[in-house]
Length: 287
Ligand SMILES: Cc1cc2nc3c(=O)[nH]c(=O)nc-3n(C[C@H](O)[C@H](O)[C@H](O)COP(=O)(O)OP(=O)(O)OC[C@H]3O[C@@H](n4cnc5c(N)ncnc54)[C@H](O)[C@@H]3O)c2cc1C
Image (cartoon, rainbow, N blue to C red):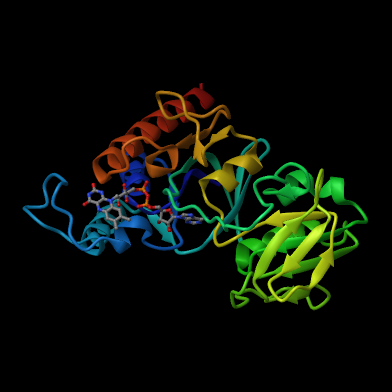
């Protein structure tokens, strides 16, 4: 059981880790990659770098700083966060428990411009298998996605629904789906249905009759993780209080995933605020 798990190893997550570690809290940082900084060649507007620095170099320095304080890092993709007495953070192959969680997963949104997707949201199009699986008991469903996150969603439905068809929308499959799940690699043309989902049509004109479609494209982002927890999400951003706490005691969020000024300086500041709030929260548990 960690005191704090930080999901996201960008400036917000690493800044938060510096604070929780210095408060003597056992801290695990899980990040699937270098986030937005990895795509940034030149940063000229962040304090203390002596001029221009690359995103990669800034990340390396940040990580070293966290490791020097005995912070633990894992390169894994988080697919769900569950809430009972404490929190369980799941990756495809592992589960980690913590008393508090800071979500700092950045701003990347995995959307697909597929006809019918937005219109049928809540009418057979779902973004959370764990939340909605029960409504599809004995029915035929589709999963839109091709990776570990899609596999996680599929497994939440497996055994409960009648059949699962995985639509990769033209992508290569990158996770090991059970052999009884049908894989369709043809790009998706439309999620069909008037009042509710009736199926999926692919670009080659094939029609698949379905009762529901679960969207699990790319990686679980802030919006998806928050939805699973039942946290309010606006425009795919997690809604937070001024101290970066959320509606769920023990869950905090910071950085690009809460919106605002999407810059390193703000992410670092918000990471610090989220960590200070988490420290306060953990102290209140021990009273
Ligand atoms: C091309 C480009 C140039 C930029 N230039 C500048 C600049 O010059 N100056 C400036 O101040 N800002 C710049 N920015 C913005 C800046 O990079 C971001 O504001 C900042 O990185 C946000 O930090 P963050 O920690 O919130 O998110 P990110 O840096 O995006 O980090 C998110 C972290 O979450 C992880 N993650 C996401 N989902 C999961 C999951 N499911 N499981 C596990 N880990 C997950 C990612 O792997 C990553 O580690 C630029 C951004 C881009 C894209």
